[in-house]
Image (cartoon, rainbow, N blue to C red; front, side, top):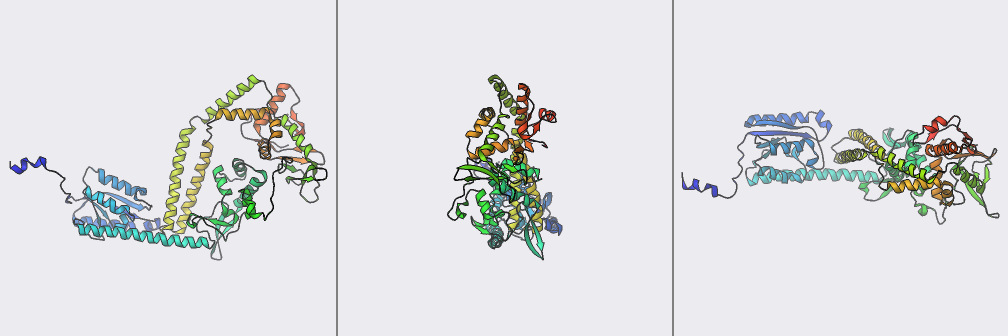
Length: 537
């Protein structure tokens, strides 16, 4: 044994990797599905196979063979799988064959990743760009090609973004329009028009302004018309200036410009709904709230089915409810109708002993906890799925901006992803029923039920309106000629309380002031769930 061999264990540093292996993998990729159809993948694969055969390489596995495009390499599933394989492969991989370096990567990560792979003894070979990367000069050439690929990518992105920005500044919406609009071709020109769903959404703005409904209440009304949204989506729609004929987009960097599409609602209505109409009122203020007239926009005229409005006779300082329909003539003293409504609320008041209230609270908490059991895991899963779909939409928009997708493909897939996202958001809304302060919420609900008339009389205008629509979701109709009222819907929880109260007190069952008797309702009342029940009165 030589002296040098004996001292070999004391050597420092690692021996340089020498690319003498013949094992390789093949990675092929295109950016769009159109390129899959025009045999670009087949062209890439054929060139890689010929190169491997010519140089005596053994192909261990093929990766890609599909369309992948993303902002970062980690977002490409096949690419990530290939990198993981070559790092962990039991058979040492020496080469990654690609058709061209831009098929491997087109971002700043490419140079770093190629250096990391080279440190593991793995070299990237472009079969159409022959470069000897075993020396610094060849490695520099490869890095330059990576840089040119990234530079070209950024130039294309900049060009596309500039084009879209100019289109937006001119008032034209470049992508699929929001819910309520359709994109149609008229005489060869693209035009955005209001569809049937848009006509229903127009009412949502009016509900918010006139009735001050919550987003959840608006969501339920829209669902009755076949438009199923979560309350977060409702809030986003009511705050989207697109519906007022304006355009807002991230590319505009905070600017809002007039659009060429037909507005769904007026600018004044949109600003009122969002509480900033002061900029349009030209020096005078509008006070929609009046504590003397809490039933306006809640009571409807029996004749014309329009909401009653309010006014004051200043000489007498008396308020009245009045129908604005010309020739209708419905007019009634506000104090009289307010007092009658308070008397009506007395029928729905929870009037039981204290020990019974404790039992009701315990049962309410137990029922709620039982209902929400197991929903947390479902909610977490839905959140993860929602995150993934949102990422898909972001990637799709990025590819469209970078001109890697045709308009036809973009509109096709963005519609599918948005529908999927909407469905998930609706499920999230259903699953997000967990309340952190459950005891306080139950106490508050019971307190309102016990002191319903008192709470309504002492509440402010907005609270009164919410209580009114909570009990009677569709409001109450008033017949001035017969001095009678009726309603089509009563919240089933309060209806059950009224029914139970009369059973306990052995009173005549019914609500005469609304023309309601329980003879035909007793079975429905007893079996009513938590959703409002509809009755033909």
